[in-house]
Length: 185
Image (cartoon, helix red, strand yellow):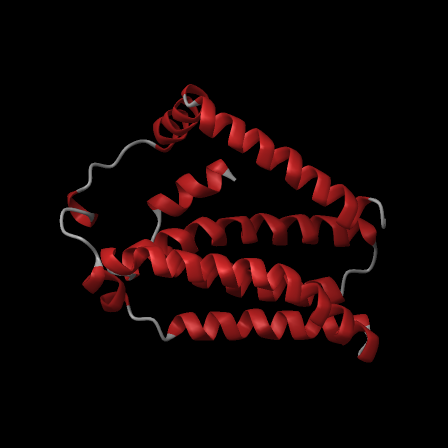
């Protein structure tokens, strides 16, 4: 996750989000044709790794597309949609699975990722740069990837509140992971 954040900061966010959606859609279709678990598990791991890049790119893109005075509202709406999808997603997925076969559900997932890619194609680069605040972009000094990653971790380790929050979040995420996925498996 921390590496994905650094990568998302260094690359064009719009292109990265498009690439992530397109690759995720393709890998989701490939899941349908996986002949065994030996093929399925690496496909799912690669799909999850690519999806990891999408979240920091989306958060960074929000900051570059929204004016400073509307940033709090945009972040709140992003959080509302994200948390709402965690509730509505499994409910809709369970309903779809009760009506359709698992293969159709996987295909629908791939099609929706493709729709997300097509939606991102409507966003123009000029729209992103128009709202950007002055002093950013081309004038920024390029810092080495390793340096940025080390600075981020050292900042987190120095801040007791941030470190405790991250550890609490990690324990919570692991507990949810165990309940949602591991116990049922």
